[in-house]
Image (cartoon, rainbow, N blue to C red; front, top):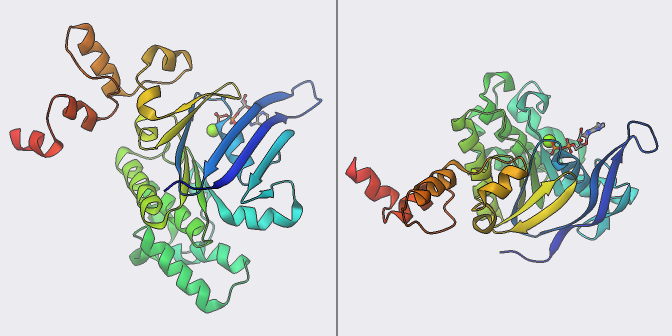
Length: 288
Ligand code: ADP
Ligand code: MG
């Protein structure tokens, strides 16, 4: 699935309030590539630079040093600005700050209308986007009637209507309850699998990041490790030093190992745990 580079971040640094006494070096020499069709997770403690990186990826901010390219265009090229914003859609943490129109349908139409597309094409895209997130039936509802998870799915539909190559979710599930979180993650997973959209999932929930093929770990403005979730998340002491909470199933496995249980490395999810015990989720269900 993974192909050529879609987003290339080269030696990018970002300073807030440069040259001022309150200057903050939020990113320090980031090198990162997001390939077409890739599902990448970015994890890191609060303040490690994740949101700053998210905003660099679609050119909302420009690196103080270094370069970001999207589909070959530098984000510093003013002529490519709108194409880059279309290609890389950002979904933020707070579902209430992202929806602007009186109905779900009008909200999703907002982006394509700004592209100046013909009315028929706008209608087609809005329908396809709302069907893709499972909210076509709710198209006439005012957004405030929706749950947090549904609002984030409308925000996703708004991005989809732009026919993006990549979705960047900046802690987009952090304010949701567990059901809403699962709803949004399932939708994103499906869009990735079925439409081949690249995903950059920024989160501090390591169980969520475990769904990605590759994870980048941030610490104080740097990427300190990249690798498969199973390689990185089986190191609880290291994760804790970085201010991250190891996945609960990994912690449980570590405690059981200390008590002499013989369990394989790389246990992160409930399914891993069951598999280590020789149980499938279905078999476990049957025993209940
Ligand atoms: P994260 O999303 O991982 O919590 P951020 O990218 O939001 O990290 O922040 C990285 C660093 O930049 C932090 O030290 C934060 O305080 C600082 N920072 C973020 N936004 C601003 C801003 N608008 N002005 C000044 N400093 C900021
Ligand atoms: Mg953030």
